Length: 379
Image (tube, rainbow, N blue to C red; front, side, top):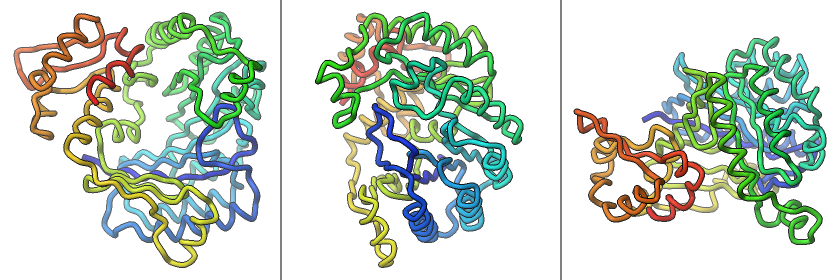
């Protein structure tokens, strides 16, 4: 099992109406102090740990200056160990990218970029609070290619208020025309204490029709599959050989270290979370204390539940024999009644072969759409 590292950058130019991540508006002084703290925390990671994947996320990591990104990336690769075939991703907002910044990122060792396009409709982008337009998003993908990136992902959102099926089809067509190696298509979710949830409560915006949203998801699967993308996880599609290895490690319950404010780690069966308040994080690092504020020892029953719903997120599902070897549970017998009920409802399927270790439990297409209903049955 591989080990990953996540580095959190909690700054943006503007907060999107749906965002509930730990992030705030970029300010140069805070960013400089934060990068200094990040570098100190990175030095506390146990020596000899080898990381197969790196993910710099946010917020908006590319809101940082080219010099700040160069400094941070160099520090990461100078002090942490990566094999030759590592994957290193950075999240990017199209409105924060230029040739210089992308060149610095790529030459520093980052070999994958995930661009938050969200939509190719300018009205939808404005409603969501994005700082870019359709043309800027398209330019960002081309700039990334020019800077030497050969593993480019773009994120899309469906179920946006006032979004039509025609608009969603156009977004998907524009996305596949760019031929990125990876496309993620997420349903817009309403989180508490966001501008979007307030707009729904006050009647300023209306949530989209459930049937339309389901139709959008189904069309995404069909369109992206026909364009050569493999549907490998509920919301993720990639060209052959280009799944996000970092996220796959999460779904396989591999170990990972999290660095930065509110970052989570999962090491040796325990989950750890850093302080979610920027000033507290900065002070504890400055005082040479641990920023960890929450520690959770994952018990056997919770580990089993996590393994089930994370594993079923992948379209290939769970290999029954491999699951038994790792957790000591035969899921086909342990959850016999639940599985019988879900199979009757058309939510899961069991694929058998002559070799028992290849028997797989996976979600059907209907199960992918109603995945949360399936996961609840296992928790």
